[in-house]
Image (cartoon, rainbow, N blue to C red):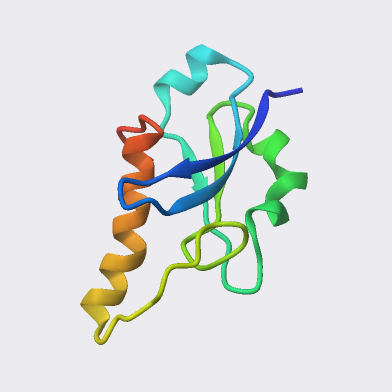
Length: 106
């Protein structure tokens, strides 16, 4: 069985992204592959992946992340007025999450 952690990762702006992390069974295999990051759609949460996490983590670290405003992550005001602002809201928070997790690639 893989090592499982559930964490709320704090971002520089104070928001948190709820994260379900499973460490790969083999450190050597995990070091050679990019981490897999699973993002549930609206109406779902990171917990929807729990039955798949063990098998997905055979050869790589796997993370299921609740994006801002969903699941158990922070729910900041969403004031985007255009597509670019909406992308910045979601992609920017995921980029900060990636840095906080020490992931160079995913």
